[in-house]
Image 1 (cartoon, one colour):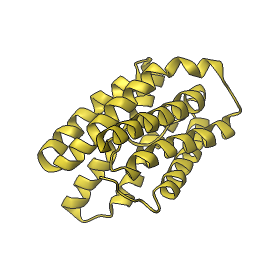
Image 2: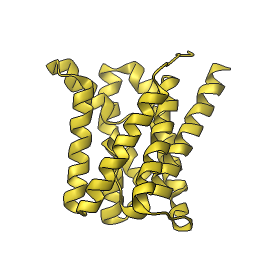
Image 3: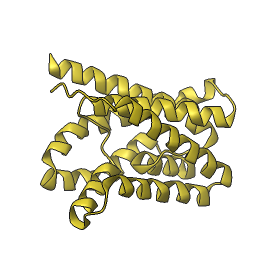
Length: 193
């Protein structure tokens, strides 16, 4: 029963992330941080599928996880694959719905934060740069939260330089709402494994 519940959580979380990205971020070339943001940059630049790019850019991270963070590997691989699948399969929906840029960035951030928060609440995730931050933290002693913030900032600043100031500002709004929503949603985490 736990396996089925965790599977449903991953699917629901992945759909929330995908809706946030495709309905609200993609129409304005807004970025999220981390590997999702890198996948979106590649999508915006060359039209390659963002979900597929997320999987490709995650391979080295999961390689590290296999050797150094086996629990992370098992708890994140399925979340990364399923969320990437939904990001690509639901991509065409962005053409059917459009609101103003700032509310779109806020709503997109909230949906992505809900998806991530839901997964984290049940000890799974989409993988990504969280592991890179954890790996660097283990080697250097730096705070993992600060490292995640730095990585996200580099991704978003890169997107701002590649696209526009509007992309940068909207992406900052988005990651603020992703962070706030994820934090609120996971504040009283009860692990059910």
